[in-house]
Structure formats: C-alpha cells, structure tokens
Image 1 (cartoon, helix red, strand yellow):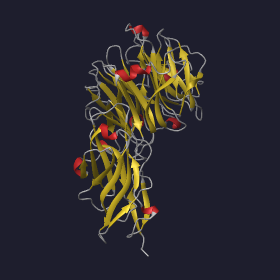
Image 2 (tube, helix red, strand yellow):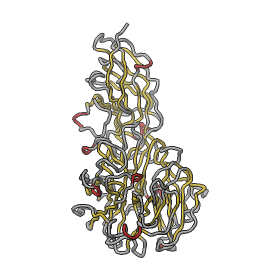
Image 3 (cartoon, helix red, strand yellow):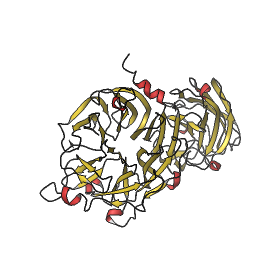
Image 4 (cartoon, helix red, strand yellow):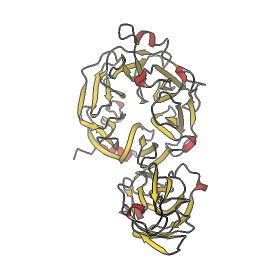
Length: 539
C-alpha cells in the first residue's frame, strides 16, 4: 500500500491541504481538476484562458505528455491558435511571461484535438496547465469560445509508463463570450497588489476614459482598520490601451481622517474638471465612518492634486450632520461609482448614511453648486432602509434615484434641485442580488438626434452575486426589459459609460476566476449592438 504524503497546494480556487498517494494510477480523489477560465474575451485577444487543469491532487512526479480535447460549437472558427502553458501558481494573467512555460502551440480543429506537450514539468513543481486561445480579430460578436478535456496522457518519473486519466469534470460550466473589446485592468496580484475592488469610470471632456479602483492589498474587506489606496488608469483610444496605475489617494495608516481611502465616485463638472469623491479614515461604515475626501483633475485625469482634500469638516459636517438633536450624523459615505452633473451645472451624489448608532441606512443627497468648492448634504430623506444608490436626470430636469436592495430595485423621484422627494417604491421588473449597480441614459429624445429615450441599467439577475445583466427602459425608468447578458458567472459591482463613438463600456468586478479574488474587467459593446437593444421586446 502506498504511504500518503501531505502537500500544501495553492489550488486554483484557494489554498488547501490535501493528502495524496505517491504512486499508482489516479483514484477518483486524485484526478486532475478542470476549471473554466474567465467568461469574457475580446476580438484579437492573445492567450485568453479557456481552461485550467489543476494537477495538485495527482502524484508529485506526474508529467503530462498529451491532452485530448474538443473545441465546442464555433470555437474553431473564432480562434487562430491554441496554446498550452504550465505555471507554478494559480494566477495566469498577473505572471510575467517568462514565468509561463509554453508547452504546445497548435492550429484549431473542428471537434476533437490532440495537444502533444513538450517539456512538461512534474506536477509537484508546476501543478497548473493552462489551455489558451488567440482570438481571431474577426471573431463573431456574442458567440462563445469553449472547450472540454476528454483525456490526459501522463507518465510518472518513477515508472516511465504512459497512462491515461479521464477527468470527470472536463467540461465545466460556461465559456468565454466574445466582445468587440475586452481588457482585464487589474487581476489578483497584478501591479504589486493582491486585492482590487470597487470600479468607477467616467469619460473625460477630451473623450478619454478614466477609471478608479480600491487597492486593498492583503485584505479584501471594506475601508476600516486597514490600508486602502485609490488608483486610476486612463485610456485615450476607447479602451484598447491603458496607462499604468497612478495612486491618487494614498492612506498613511496613521491619521484618523487619512488612514485609508476607498469607494471612489466620479463626476465631471460643466467646466470639464473631474471630481473624485471617496470615503476616508480608519473606521468602517458601521463603526461610524464620517470622513469624505475629494480629489480632482483639471487635465482629463492625467494629473491630480498632491493629496485628497477632506471636505466634511467646515463644509457640511457642522450644519447637516446635526440631524438628530445636535448629536450629529453617525456615519456617511458617498455611493461608489459615479454621481451626476445636471444640465444646470449642479454636481450631485447620493450618500449612504446612518443617523444614530445601530440605526439603519438612509440615502441623502450631497450637492455642490460651485464645481466642488463647497458642498451641502441635504436634510431631506431620499430613500429609507437604503444602500448604495445612483442618480440620473430625467428629460424634464427632475431626478431619479436607483437604490441597491435585495430583490426588486428601489426607486424614488426628486425635484430638480434635490430638495424634495416623493414616496419611494420598488420596481416590479428590475430584480436581482443585493449589490451596487448603475443606471445611465444611452440616448435621449431631447438631444435632437432623432433617437428615442433609452435608459440602461446593470444588475445581477440572481439571488446571489452572479449573472451580470443589462436592462433597458423606454419610459424613463418605469418599466424595464432584459436586453443583454454580460456574463452568467460570478460578478459584483458594475458601472457603465457611453463612449464618444457610441459604444457602451462596462467596468465591473469579475469573480469568474473560481475564487482567486476580484478581477476588474472592462468590456465594450459596439454602437450597433446597443442600438439593437431598442428592437428587443418590440417584436
């Protein structure tokens, strides 16, 4: 009988301890595990991961010499090349190319394929095999790239005899949906940071795209008692290439109001300045977070102030925090993602607030009428029992708030100046997980372009955080129709922007990498795809 040995394996989904046999044919418990790669890719992408084979449960001296697989559907038409890489770690995209060992390159074939590997290292040294595809620049939009593993031929260095193993999970769920453009802006461990969260995005006055995220380092938790910085990247070619990350708000891990920064939210003023509001401090929201900081850029996101400016004290803390008999607002943060600049030039954000210890969350409106030089937090309740919320200006100048809820989305209508709000309600068509989302106008009939009104709303159409979906509304948010699925697998926060060429950009937290952490994913739908949304439901 074989003696078991204990190995610490950095598995594809997390770190786990396994007890493995040292020799002999793989048992059901010691077969390789096949995992789906990410669920999106783009035309022309290189080395898009279709599948990952985790050999961590196989004997340490296993060397794979051949992979039998099947390219499903139209995959063979949508890709130019198949490759196999081997790595020592469970993250592919953040690795330097020199740390990915190329074992095989092959042209795609319809149906069955055989991949003969050259120089495969033992499973104990490099336990991960990656099946990747070079996507054709002419790949069919909205089609899928998918594959399944039918067999692995291997030998152990002890015997040298060839053996075959048939993975029981060789065809994992989902595939990669093809977009006009797809880029991972941040993956776990990229740019010297393990954890990324909370995407924000805005189109600058010159048409460039500016994005922001939380650099959460060794913890993925929200702000409070650990260091978080805010970093930006920008693109001047509609998302094809991106600048290196630039930290615009760096916590000092010392000072109460500057301990850390997070949950960035953008607005572009009428004068073209980009404002980035964010939470700040050492306390978490439910422990009494009370600091809001602001960064700004006057050159379309290229350069920023030396450091964020704390805007609570002296601006609105003294007057509006005193909502409860002079004791003050207990906690407040600006809803992450984006705010609103109205046609008359007012800059607005919805804040999530707690007015007393152990109280429930409420939305109030934060407003500046002078492009961010001063701020007022309005005393009128926007939404009770709330969470993160987004604002949009309707054609008549009044406001519509969309509020995160579990189940049906929350809404309320307000006056143009944000001082008066109606009775809140829940949508009967827009339903999903308890998560931050976004709402935008794609076209308006008041813009003089002959287009009909079409609002778009992102939401996770699921009980839990998965199935990122876009809905449309032609009646200013009263009813909604599902029009597009971004990805069916795990996802979280999302934000959207209309680019200058009429395409739609979606930036979101992609969790389809089987638990290795949040990836910040950027995808683009063409103008033609989005305009076709107008026909859906009208047949």
